[in-house]
Image 1 (cartoon, rainbow, N blue to C red):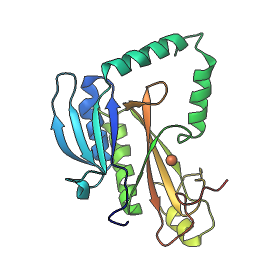
Image 2 (image 1 turned 180 degrees about the vertical axis):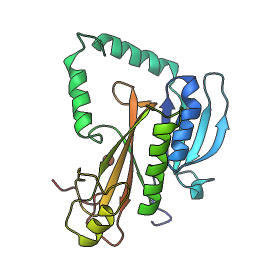
Image 3 (image 1 turned 90 degrees about the horizontal axis):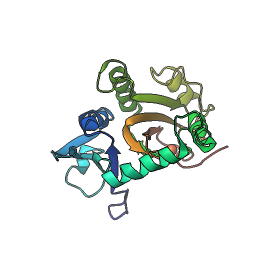
Image 4 (image 1 turned 90 degrees about the vertical axis):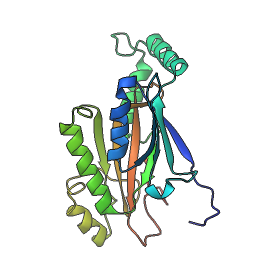
Length: 218
Ligand SMILES: [Fe+2]
């Protein structure tokens, strides 16, 4: 990328309860990001991460992580109360939204990160899956979804068939020559109902002009 290109600078993510701060930070570390600062605050820790260590002292590639601000939580609580979320007479729009996200986790607000090697992506996913199954901080808090590249390129298809992560995946991306991993977690709070967040990790095979992030195919 050209040095004078505009880049995405930072994201502000929030965890719910103050006690979830360390687990949310652990999740970001397991996703391959680097914690550069932790500021203990009375309401919950404030963290600065960078998506790659090369952003350590830079102004981009940053993720800030802090507790959901009180007025935001009050608004979310009021919305959920008014819609009777989780109750027998829940507003039907809630099920509609949940159904859409179940079918396609990237249909609404989400964050995507590009990982520079498939080996690295597989390593991150295997580590995160292990933690999601065995680490008490993450157990029951993380769900996964996978899309493999649209079939057609023999080299890509063979590599993915042999992959410990994508070999058994039957969902396909809206495009070629790349893969997507979706990580849904209630350790981070975003979206219309303020109850979870969807993070996406992608890999694009090199030397391809048409890939999942360059051309959307239906
Ligand atoms: Fe996406």
